[in-house]
Image (cartoon, rainbow, N blue to C red; front, top):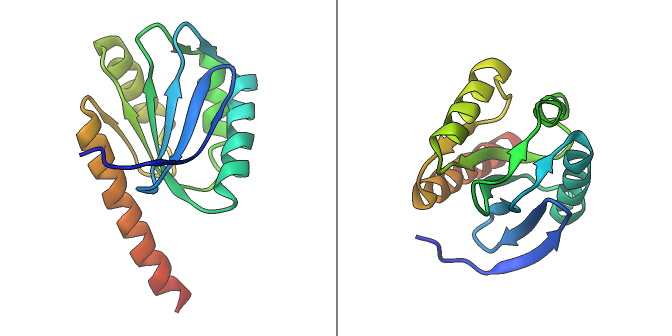
Length: 144
């Protein structure tokens, strides 16, 4: 399914961020990193700079299974979920341990935006595109 080009890209200590022609923002968490509140703060500022006030679907995935989001990082992300506009968040997980963490996060942190966990990139991209189409349709209706 992946048929897109990267329009803008940027990098932080912990992630590579790609704004793509299919309107999905892909965030690859680098290997061997712990994502802390400080890294989330930097990422959220970067999202705001690159998105220029527009809402997009965000698709998060890890370069490999060695990265980790700290408990403080998860808390910061939840407390600051409105710090940048978004349509939805999708998380691609390839290890059972990461899936359990993602499911736990969803159960107890109840995001205010659509958030779904996937084990397949094509399914995650398809869902992001569906969410973006719904967002655009509702945004057009509310702006009339």
